[in-house]
Structures are given as structure tokens and as C-alpha cells.
Length: 49
Image (cartoon, rainbow, N blue to C red; front, side, top):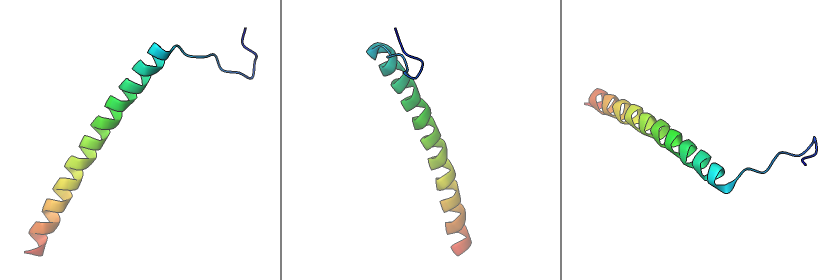
């Protein structure tokens, strides 16, 4: 039984799946940031010429 102030323990398999899903979301977010960064860098280089 779990006390009111404790969180139930998560099965390792479930936690691994949660971490993998979060990792995929983080990877997608980083890819979007990289695309935006690359576009901004390209715009700045064009203006410098």
C-alpha cells in the first residue's frame, strides 16, 4: 500500500518507454530549432554581403 505522500513506483519497462517517448519529442524539438537556426544564419550571411 502507498502512503498519501508517496508516489507509486513505476515499472521499469513503463519508465523506459516514457523516457524513449520523451527522448523522441526532444529530438524533434531540437531538429526544429536547428532548422530555424540554419535559416537565420543563412539570412544573416546574405545580409553581410
